[in-house]
Length: 396
Image (cartoon, rainbow, N blue to C red; front, side, top):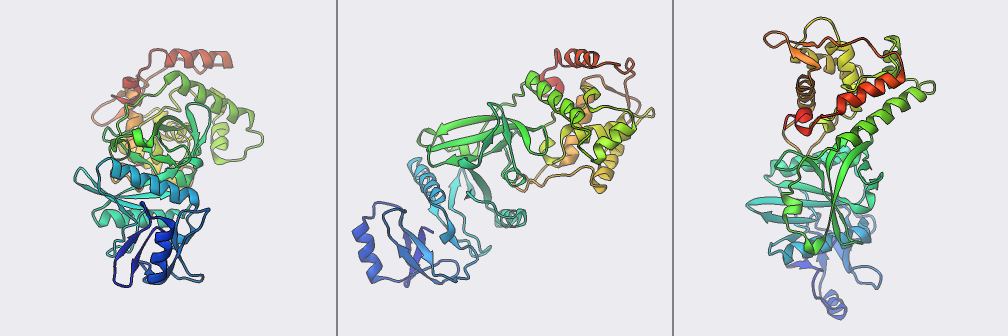
């Protein structure tokens, strides 16, 4: 940790223009204490690491800040220095006794009190949610910043995200998804945005890279991105997944494939209206192909009319049976998987796959017979996506 208190309660911040001799002299004349647990801490001054405070071995401090890596410390320092150069008044490692938490940086921006957590190692989802909820309850908006070294890109417009990394999701003022990231080695922000899940781990995404000292504070606190799905790219990725499920079906034993084959449906022959991107899809951990297939099999594809509440009930039944898994997004206080279901119904209506059938009721539009060979489904798919726009898919 970079901040401690003297016996007299004076707050000591090791970031600044302190010379090594000055710090050594100050260390000889003072004792230092952790602002949180009040235990005595040691000022460490070496040649390899940034000067910092460390708890003694066997400390029971709940946060154990001495475990921070050099990558973490240097990133925290750069973020702190950037905020000061942008005319803000950040506090390094402020301690909030009312919630017993200490973020990396506290700062006010445009009337809002923010707590910045630069997270370079995994913690449990339970702890992440607990800390996040405590900040909100204290009237503080948390921003969790992912370590840039943790990003696993797949080409120019895909990413592999773990369940832990999905916890970092925020929504921009325009309602689109972003994961803020920072790398002290390249001294750059790497904002991951326009995130649309393809599978449990892989998603389509865009990257916005900006050198830290060229970046405006809005890149962190109030980023703006237009929703910009590449329709052709989405079509290709969904097609790959459907084909992959068919090719690997012999080696995969799961309820989803069993449900498909029990209905004589090959995954590669799933229609193009299954596997559509919807804005709130990140709330659903299960892939869009799977959860949308279940909605078609259980509700939408039936002969009888259906309602939105019936779609939601069918979805919830699949969740109860562990066929579909939903995802917690603790940094977003409005929104849920229910929004994704409603958006999917809206997309089906916009695409004339579903029509209104009376007050609050809907019915699948009668289509031509099922394709009997692979080339035909590809043709149908190409025709389906031809002319589709962002507005048609997401009602924008």
